[in-house]
Image (cartoon, rainbow over all chains, first blue to last red; front, side, top):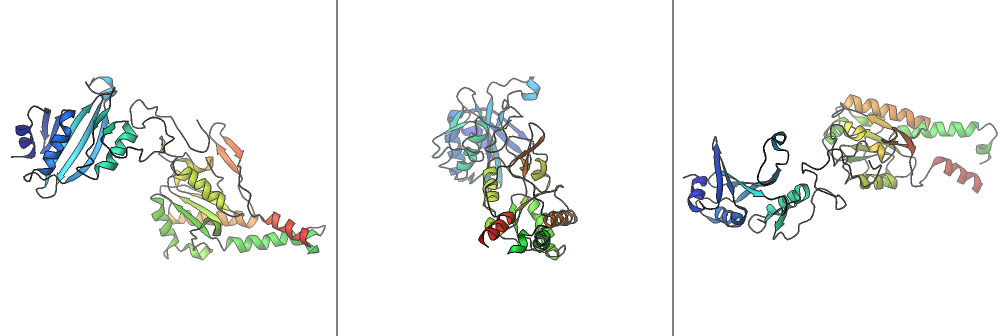
Length: 164
Length: 188
């Protein structure tokens, strides 16, 4: 059984959608179940996803030139890897624009701490339970979140030097 | 020290020539290395291209001990105040070299995070474009810088993207040779 099949069997109610392109397994899950599923992936001996490779987000505003309207504006994307079994799994969590918040995975993988700060910095998605949710790349004086699709592409916020 | 105030200014001009000659072959550079251009800077500095032939081989890692600020690599808005502070800490006379296209104009980083040319923050004397510049290009820039040092020329203007012209730089007061000569004259 692949990790995705194990997940589908165990958490059928929490999985919205799955797909597997050339062995690249992806599950879109309900935000409320994120913490439980992540803990299951990490602590089940047959899976042993001990490595959080990447944690990022996608902004679907103006997706495909505005032709595709998604139900939720954001998606937080998690890439897990099992060093022991060489498994890879991708989890996606839809996030609402009005209340952009998901659970933090900081207690499970230490690397989640900085990844979540980066997602907060760039997309303005909050992580519930994060111990230190500050900007990580931009300076504190920066207003807005730079990788949101509605951030003006020509907007500059220099600390010193000429303002535009 | 009366020769310095002689009516023809003969000795003063010759003194500045001698100072320029001495300075241009004893460039102590401060490498402000932030990005990939740093590798090319190291290549230009190592034995194959050997910047030390031109008396510019010895980097000092304190701004107070250096004459030329080499800004090597992309400068982000977060880094900009640091660069300004380092430049302010350098003693006069000082020169600035913009190494690589990111420092010259921002390069292809036309985005929220990157300074569009360090000449909007500190005055730049020599621009070495390229992504990254070839070591030959760097040495060419160094020779042009030596010409400027010999003539005693220093850029004192910043680029203003709003008006597309220069504006005077507000620099911190530091040591200057004119001030030093005045000091000697007043002491004698």
